Length: 78
Image (cartoon, rainbow, N blue to C red; front, side, top):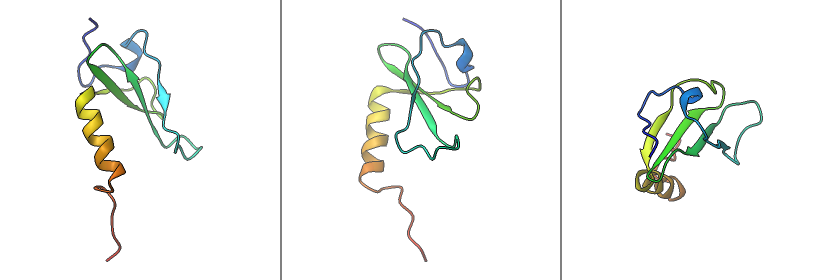
């Protein structure tokens, strides 16, 4: 199994197929995700494709995405 940790340069993550968010704004302000092994998902900033990756377990990504879909991170105007 490939071992990838937070901060690993994405250029060192061999075999990763990066997927850009479908809600990308078209000017490069988005995140990309890649499965890096059987248990982990890496996240990178599309503006810095060789920069460091943040690495999460698949369950952590699922919880995060579920929270986003439920509006947990939506801001409200005050």
